[in-house]
Image (cartoon, one colour):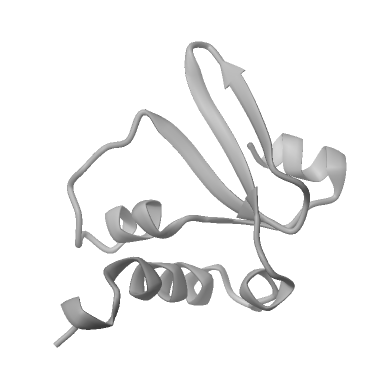
Length: 84
């Protein structure tokens, strides 16, 4: 996925479900990898696994640190009513 992003000069970040897994807030494993990018929506099948890049606004992708992007996506995925 990083090689594809480099090839097209995209900035990418994992989506909310991947961020929840990273922080240990979810144990679900999804059959496809979805990343947010500043490029167009694209889908690839690599060795039977689906890799997706979904376009998002530049303000969500322009965070300086990868950890900040993961935290923002995890909080957005949880939604306000599930955060106490």
